Amino acid sequence: MNFLDLVKRRFSVRVYEGTPVPEEKLEMVLEAGRLAPSAANRQAWRLVVVRDERQRRALGEAYPRDWFWSAPVILVVCMDAAKAWVRADGKNYSDVDGAIFMDHMTLCAASLGLGTCWIGAFDPDKVRHVLSIPGHVEPIAMTPLGVPAEPVRAKSRKPLAEVVNFDRYRP
Image (cartoon, rainbow, N blue to C red; front, side):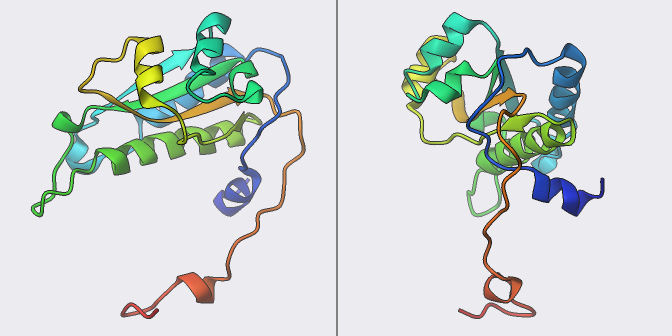
């Protein structure tokens, strides 16, 4: 499958089969994250892989949707901003690096026939508590991971002409 076909195939899955994620596929997804680029190669990320049902249910307190915690795996991307690269104007790249890390995993999952759903609207303090994440480390994104129990959905996107500028910004 070419890259654009893969990007079209990846969508936010909210219904998962109860089957476990095969270990070799999970390892490939994790490796895709590990190989992601980061600013100045700082790799300030840490990932928590949650397979235990009690832990997944507890994470459901941070994001209360049954479909979320009922997936067989939840991946939690965490960043240590103190270890991330900082641009000259003070912009810390930890969120950018964490997003790249997560995106590599979600695309790899889609290539393997697995589903994900990027979750950002969660209570970070509850996630910290459930997973024993220290205060200086920020959970920035989570995704369930599993076999989708729904078909690939078409994406609704703005046309290129509405989002792309050439040579200078135009509103």
